[in-house]
Image 1 (cartoon, helix red, strand yellow):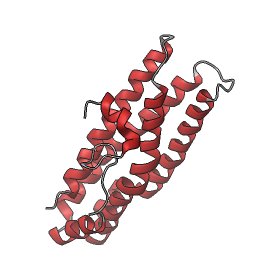
Image 2 (spheres, one colour):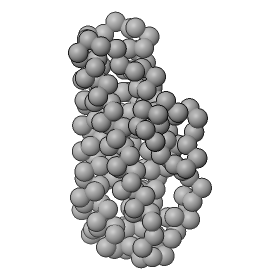
Image 3 (cartoon, helix red, strand yellow):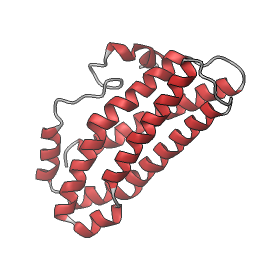
Image 4 (cartoon, one colour):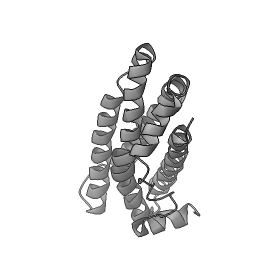
Length: 179
């Protein structure tokens, strides 16, 4: 098996770190302290970028191969593509809420913490489903050639925060995470 499945699991672990960071920042906000707004913006930038452009398309390709190899197993996973679309919408909604907060738009004090918790809960629920249902089924059903095809398709894509060639715009986030 190729490293694709390991990469997807590592992405989930990395995303979990970012979700933990969001929760840390919202606790500061709720305690009346000032969260690190630059850090929050970088996290939102990451979620608008990497999962939507690399991680989810990679999973979608794995699912397409799974449908060809094991239609019953793929059916048990559900409509992963629709979930990815919903997550993209929710991510944009969360980004808009953060932008409103940064622009000092009038909003109830609990609107931002609620938006963070809704986003974090949805992300964790989605990753848990993938880790418990999708990835194990794919791991069992796909051939080495399938994994090689997926790896080839995404060979030039690297995580902009956690990858070897991390992007400068995420320096604050990398520093916070001690990467």
